[in-house]
Image (cartoon, rainbow, N blue to C red):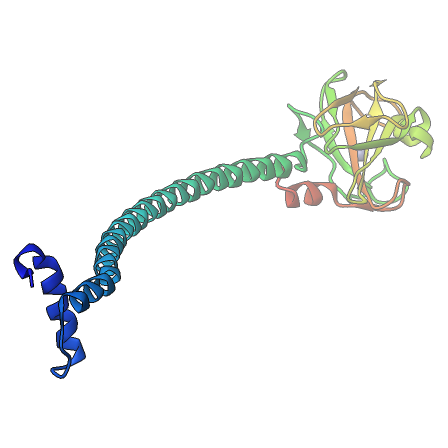
Length: 247
Ligand SMILES: [Zn+2]
C-alpha cells in the first residue's frame, strides 16, 4: 500500500467507503477505482460552486435590474406627473381662451342705440295728429346729419325713399333683418349708406338722420318689428332695454 503517496485518493476512498458500508474490503486497485468514481463528484462540487457564484451574480444582476426598473418607474411617474401638470396648465389656458371667446361672442350679439346725443320724444303707441294709427316706433330727436347705426348685425332688406316700400310717411327708410327673426327700422333719413342685401355689423353706420317724410322736425323714427313690414311693430324702447341697452 502506498497511502502516503495518494492522500487525495485515500480521502476519496474513505468517503466512498463510508457510503458503501463496512463489509467492503479495499485494495490499492479498489482505491483507484473509487478515486476515479470520485472525480465526477469533485466536478459536481466545482459546478455547484460555479452555479452558486452564477446564482449570486444573477441575483445581483436581478437586483440591479430591479433597481434600474424602479428608478425608471419613478422617472416615468415623475414624467407622467409633469405631463399631467403641463396638460392641466394647457387645459386651464384653453378654458380661459374659450371663456374669452365666449365673452367676445356674447358681446358681439349685443344691441346698441341707433343714435347718440338724442332726446327721446314721441314714444311707442303714443296717439296724435301725426299718425293715422298709434305711433309704431320710438322717436330720437337729433340734428339732421347725425350718424345712424345698425342696432344689431343683420342684412338690409329695405332701403330707399317711400319708406323703402312701407309708405311715404317714413321718408327715406331702412329695414334690417336680424338673425333672431327680429327686424329694426330707421326712418326720416337724410342719407342712406347701404343697399338691400348688404350685411351690416352691430353699430355700423348705415345712414344719416333727417327730416324726410311725415316728420314734425329732425329726428330718427326707430321701430322693432317681427316681420319686415309695417304693422308688426313691438315697443322698441322696451325691446332695447330688455337687450341691456340704456336709452
Ligand atoms: Zn316716429
